[in-house]
Length: 232
Image (cartoon, rainbow, N blue to C red; front, top):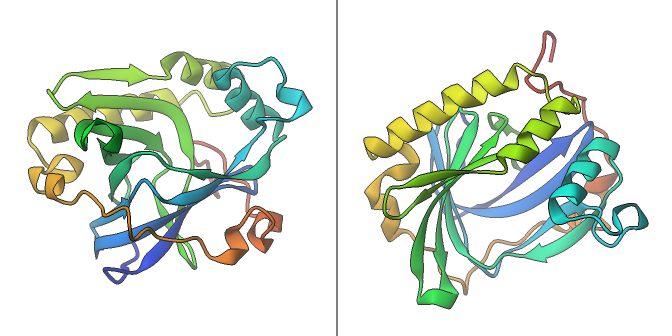
């Protein structure tokens, strides 16, 4: 089950990697229950991610190579970023994916479709949720067609031992469930969510301890195998 939050409140959705905070994103709660959490992120939302961009270790690398090396070596620093799309997120307990709907303000608010981010099932924290992006993504376009994203990068993460080989079968099964959800218009594909495009004037804000120089980035967390192994 998911922790339940007050609608209208702000929470922080974290990523953690090898015992470190890896990203912190503020979310505004739209609806919350033990079986589903719906949040919004307008394009004015400011978030913090660990990145090696601009570091000597990443010089001359492509974006995908940089991200892989950061995960592999752990050499990264927290940097603030602003989003550029209006988004609504849907989290469900025990699911190895999170669905977000996206609108492009530079194209008259055009609905782009559903971005499926494969990640660890969400777990509660003192400020919201945490999980971990698993590199692989799937995009379902507004017309119903779909395509994989970052499949080669996912293969590389497996071959380099960043994730356990058994993760592939888990995410294959999750993808089947996602596409079935889309076919039946449930979960993150419920048509009612299309009416929830967020207002960019009122964006959630990270607590100060999640700023790049904040205390949260100095903490250590239990190291978890992916997929979670015995005792995790």
